[in-house]
Structure formats: structure tokens, C-alpha cells
Image 1 (cartoon, rainbow, N blue to C red):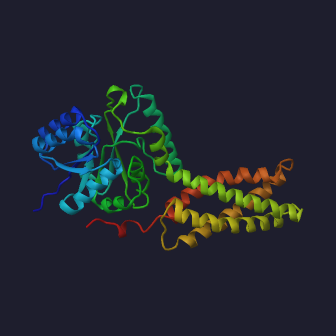
Image 2: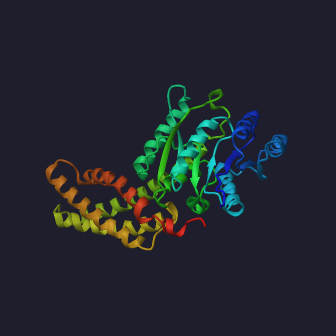
Image 3: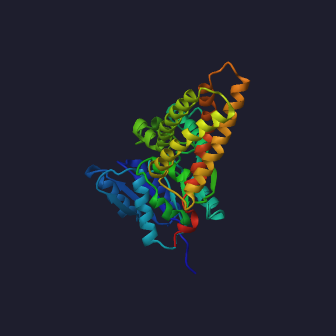
Length: 356
């Protein structure tokens, strides 16, 4: 009977004694394959990685230059896919001592009961946690829930057990730095991967000074899909509003038919721009029915928008109809994003991307 394996993956950039301490603890408890990725740490750290390989029997994969944590995880996944075919998943753990071996084992035990699910070790963000980390995780978790429908209490955790069926999809996901871990969570909906959360101990050493997270650059990368969607939507909205205003002022007649006509013309023009920009720039995915589903959404939205604008204009007669439209379409904005993300540009799903 073939022995199933869950290799331990440790991405590492410029490590110190904490990596050695972690490996000491791991080797006391497991003979499992350990893969350490040297993400371009440089010659100064070669002696540490030599110890990692010789003293702890680890597989060391090396990047000649720093490519980012996401790329390091992909390098490990590529190795596992080709060299460890009996792996049912991998577990990732940070090299800076923020995760305990006991918590890692708890996540593995949970995964063995849920071998097709993504298991996340969720930290408890109490007052002992640095303010930067608490605020970052709070806003990221809330934004993720609002814009994707994925509810995760700790979106930035590095302690994860990834199921085999998610290997190949992850290799195709864009992003080589911290945004890769966010995409891993966001795309669970696309590939029908359920998430299981396991509470773990929160460990921060020296106020998390060893973290390589770049606040501005990496935050922008993490929120990239939201930023691109907002930019495309804003441009489409301005285009839509401009055409709507021109038509309404030209007709000079506020009736239900004039509002509907102006809405049809403005939404028809702006929707073509919005569809192709989201298809090529924002989501970069489409299923075979994406255009049909997109324009079905457009029809539903314009009917909802025009009717709400008309009836709101009648009820709030002292308000300018332009302001009414801005308010109503702003409410529809989030709903539209979620439908496009989770349905229209979903991709082909798990049937096309199962690891063999």
C-alpha cells in the first residue's frame, strides 16, 4: 500500500537561528519530507542553508534572486507535483518562529479529516499582536468578505494545508509575492475548494521585526484585483453618466420612458467597455458563457437602476436625478462585483484543474 505524504514547505528569505530552531523541533516529531526554499538570500546565508540540508535532511530549492514568497510556494508546488506524486497535500509554515509545531500538527490532523479542503491556521488577534498586523488583518478580512463572499478571520496566515486538487490551479494563479496567498483564498470559490479554519497560537517575536512584508508595495499587490475592478468600474461609470446626462438634457423631459431610454443608451455603451476591460484586465478569466451571463446581469441592473431612479425621483422630487442615479448605482456596485467574480468570470472550475 502506497504511503501518503504531506510534505512540509518552508519559504525562507535571509533566515536566522529561528529557522534552525524550527527544524530541530520538526525533526523531533516527524520524518516527513521538508522542503525549504531559499528565496535569493545571498552568500551570507549559504552556511545556514547548508546546515538545513546536511543536518536536517531537508530538500533545499534555491532562487538566485529574491522572487517573493508566492513564487517560492509555487517552486515547492512544482517540485511536489513532479517528484512526490503520493503527496495528498502540502503544509506551509513560516521560517521566523511565528508558528508552533503543535499548531502545525493540529492543522494536519484537521486536514486528514478534510483532505479536499484548504486548512488555515487562524491567529487570534488580541492586544498582544502589533497594531500594524491587527489593523491590516481586520481591513483585509472585511474587504475580502464584502467583495468576494469568502469569510476568513486571518487572510494573511502562513500556516496552511493545501489539498492536492488545488496544486495545479495555484500554479496558474498570478502573483509572486504576498498577494499570492490572498489569491489562494479568493480563488477557492472559483475552484470549489472549501476552507476549514483552525485556531492557533499567536506568536510575535520582537514586534514582528523579522517580517519581510512591505507595507505599501505588498498591500497594493494584495488588493490589486479590487483596485483594478474599481478603476474599470469608475471609468465605466463616468462614461455611463456622461451619456445618460447628455441624453436626458437633450430630451428635456423627465418621464419613465426618457429615463429608460437614457439608461439603455448609456449602459449599452459603457457595458461593452466594462466587459472587455474586466475580461482582459481585472479577472483574466472567463467561462464559456461569460458574455451571455454578463449581459444578462447588465439587463437586470439597468432595469433595477432605471426603475429605482424613476420612482426615487418622483418621491424625492427636490433632488437632482443625477445625484439619485449616483447613489443607486453605488449600491449596485458591490453586488455587481460579487456576481462577476463568483459567477461570470469564474473560469472552468475544478473539473479542468485536478492534479493527477
